[in-house]
Length: 150
Image 1 (spheres, rainbow, N blue to C red):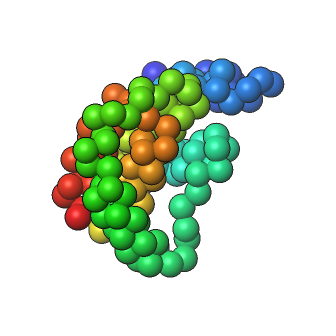
Image 2 (cartoon, helix red, strand yellow):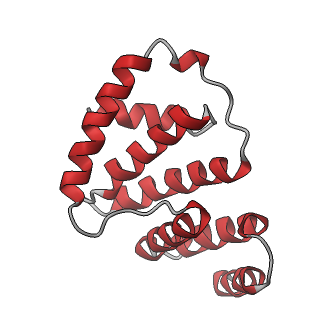
Image 3 (cartoon, one colour):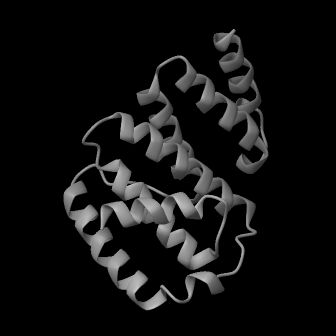
């Protein structure tokens, strides 16, 4: 059954049209891949879609350095904006919300890969997106993870 789901999703994804219109097919495809116990493949599909969606890429080299930079930026951002978090507008851009959905999924898949630096990298990307574009339903888990990482 899951193989058919993948096949149908890939058929939808292969059709012409904006990436955002294929959002449901991608979300189902990623969940289907994960349901088969292939969380590495689900993680890779999230990374692929994030790169296509808005150029959200993660470094292949220098991940530790990128995490350290993310920690410093997060500390500085939160120091200045702790009081302002409640004043942030609601995120309304559908593509940004989808990025938050994918980052949320990515953190879960990366967490299963113990020691993966994608967890802090994706978390800090989510924090940057929240501070820049507003709060979404995926902001609370991002803030909780930022608290754990700091």
